[in-house]
Image (cartoon, rainbow, N blue to C red; front, side):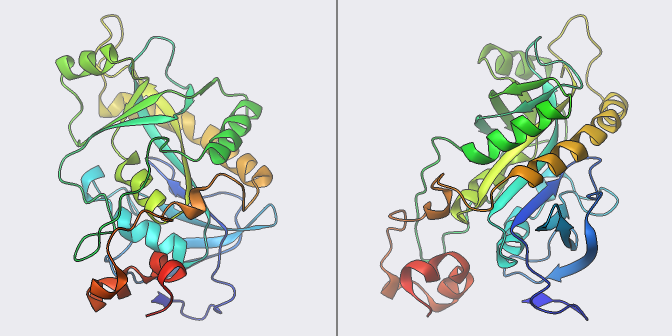
Length: 299
């Protein structure tokens, strides 16, 4: 399912994946970088994956919103993106996002590495399962703790004011929140608000990938009486200032991050699948072979 062109099969592998958000469309310092198009059972990816080497590790980068930022949050093909990363051998995924602040202490240009998430999306496909097979993953702690720690330390070393933990509210978009919604989320004690960490985090867990997100604050959403309401101009302006911090942080995290760990993300499906293998339709089993073959054997 991988269209490699002239690139050899052994070259098209990676251990760490990076998903770039708004404004983060490439990964500087990636040596011998080459685009790799991956055909997936879930349609095309947001963009070709850029595969190369950074700090002696094989890394795959994908632009979440596509080349030229052409995909709205609800249009991002997250199932295809994560399937493609896993197909290249990726085990850890570092995701970068722009967010709004819901509390005074999370100021624009700060970074937040969330440890919890609240799903306020609607209609997004958030599972690989269905069509004859049922699985219920554990999602109490939605982000990989080891990967979170690596991102947090890297951000601190990059000189960014970094908040360890906090709840991220993910809304459908593409419109920003109403003032009433923003104040509601603030009253819940949530830290920041964004549009893209879900369904990524859920799909990454199902794909048994270690996934964590670093969120860069661009604004105070619309709850703050003394700050400018969120708008594209404000977001883009602060987003550009955050990008260099994001690139530096991701690079530092890759340098120190072990490819494998003891977090348990790599065994997330153990005991989660309820359906008996013999009753699963052949087409569904083939589509899910990338995660089920290790438990059920090759069909």
